[in-house]
Image 1 (cartoon, rainbow, N blue to C red):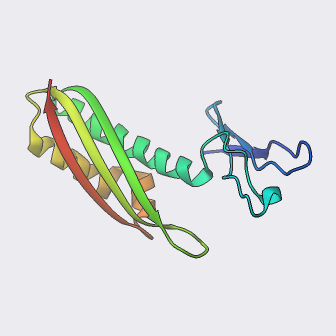
Image 2 (image 1 turned 90 degrees about the vertical axis):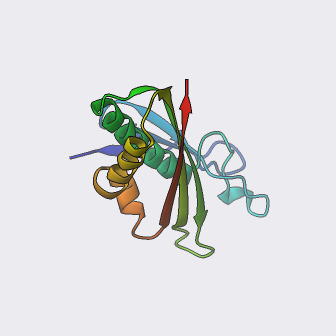
Length: 150
């Protein structure tokens, strides 16, 4: 079982603050905050930390990058770097779920097989990455990649 406790950081002063502190079961903390809302300052955040939906997108990137890197290393690829850039569109109305997510992987190393990279991304997307598989229920997920010789 995975656990997390999220606590509001409180209302300090004349306007409401929308910050939250997440404490994970593994003992780590993560701050989150809402976007400022000039039309309704009492409902807005202070822009002091990532938005909750940004953390979902970041977590998805971390989940799939972890898988891809592990698969490449197990495949004896000489990986020296792996990044994934994510861009997402959200629905216009509530609930504003992700509707499209594009992931672009950049894998750096020596003599890395493009076929192995492509297969690693496919395995992550279809079998291993819990986050992207879960998000694929509402979002069209696309991927691209490039291999950079180092």
